[in-house]
Image (spheres, rainbow, N blue to C red):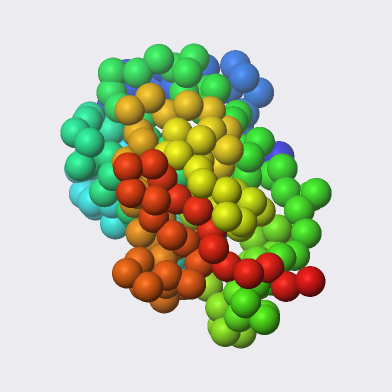
Length: 230
């Protein structure tokens, strides 16, 4: 099944997290430093990374950026950085979930399971094309092309885009997008959707002032306005 890479320098937290994850049937490898984490990543691809941001040697944000610029590996940030702006910054880097210390290890296991389930549950998706083939979204391969050029979206960004594009002209509140794209409620994380939408727009070259695909409904949320090809 592969392994979960736990990157955490606090020994006590690492032991507890590892105990709960292994009790849930997962194989866990532990890295206390960023360099150790990079060694694991270069040897074998994990199925998921749980990443502490405050490491003794390498900035955790840099590791997240490295992961997301390479392969599509889901990342859960595990950190004491609790402000809304810090959480949004984490999502902007491509994190799929954000857990603030202190936390419930049982909830962390739930979030791991939910993220892996969402990450794998794509076999029923098809290919959608919009604006005379200008935007193509492949639900099985997670590939997105704009003007024939491949666009590198994170898994979470892809799910947000897919949720919107699957329901063109439907207005989604932020809470509805969180539920539909992420699978469960992120309490207080409504603004994380704004960060994901911003990333998607930048990667698609979709000007929010004159959008082709994602329209902001001020005070409510977002809707997809691209015209689906027959």
